Image (cartoon, rainbow, N blue to C red; front, side, top):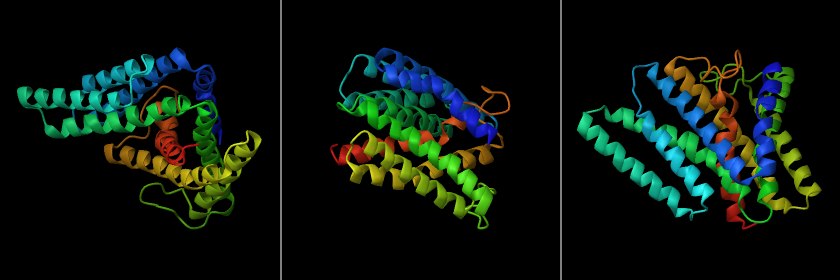
Length: 259
């Protein structure tokens, strides 16, 4: 539980920037993406791969520029395409392992693309500054209550080959908590409850998938944590594992319902 409390405290500076928005949020977003990319690529260095880190950092800078200058959303795809072409040229000229290029773009998708949906949700309409909090409500409620319920009532393992301590009971507890807190948030701020209920319900499942895929990656490359930013508690990706997948889900669902 101590780790979960510290994880929440680590995110407090980001939550402050979410309140401020604008340039400061875009800047902290660039920093988080750069650190996350470094952790992701370093993890694969552990099993002999050499991702093209500069490509990842280049795309992170492109995302920052698109955000800061308010270019249209198609610019993200254009930036991705240009980065991919540069990657292909690099592989051909240097006879690099194509798997390194695949890992490079996996990092771009996983870190940059997913994290940037936090910023895109903040900038989405008049209530974007409210909707963005759902990402963290879902992630925190799911994580904390899945832990408590699983510890107290858990007896059936969820996916023991990936995460031996997670239980079906804990998973269900996380889903219920996510729905309850999301709906309460919607009621307090007078948001449309239908979409908020759906976001909280399936968002919890997405949050748990984010946690599990991060665990799978770490098991695959043979590490305990992605980084050492917080001694004893891992790095940015260890703290944002569920948030990274929840952010695009919340954005897409709320966009679909045109809230």
